[in-house]
Image (tube, rainbow, N blue to C red; front, side, top):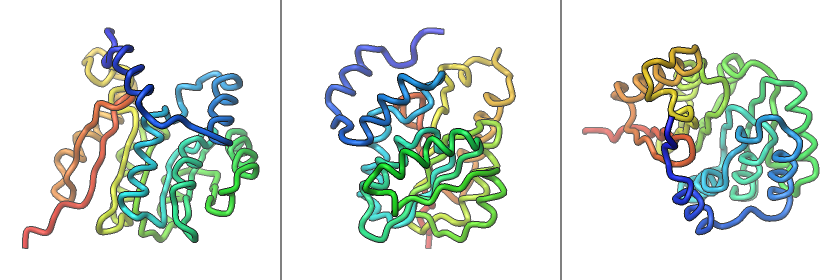
Length: 217
């Protein structure tokens, strides 16, 4: 399938986005060199967008569903005020150990709580409220993540979900694998949900953002 976003446009966007620095840049380089799927980490533009949302919302509590190596986690943690916290959920124990090591080497380690286990079950036990929720984990479970986090979203909070395009698979009816169908169900559910307003951004592999709908009264 043809590229959704032209590579020269992506390159221009990255060239005009604040570069990663310090330990976050080091983790991004480590991820690119040492993991079989480095595309799973947050891209530069996406990471800075998440940072911007933390700043713009005045977030104090962030929930991340899907940690991977921790690039997105640390970008958001760095933007939090003193006393702020990122709670990040990772299903894979080995990847959780990698992320935990990266967090331990960061000056923002005390702002991060990493929980390893099933995200749907973990979300059910979390209290919230969350100012920013970032979803980038098993696509087949996106509808479940959404239903779990929405009641725990702060009144002016925002949910951000990654990989809505799945490299074009969601746009092609021939693709019917479980994860692609999970993303499609999630997109329809958000679009039809009167509790939220939403926007699908053509950033990276597609970011769907949702926030509480204004009170009509």
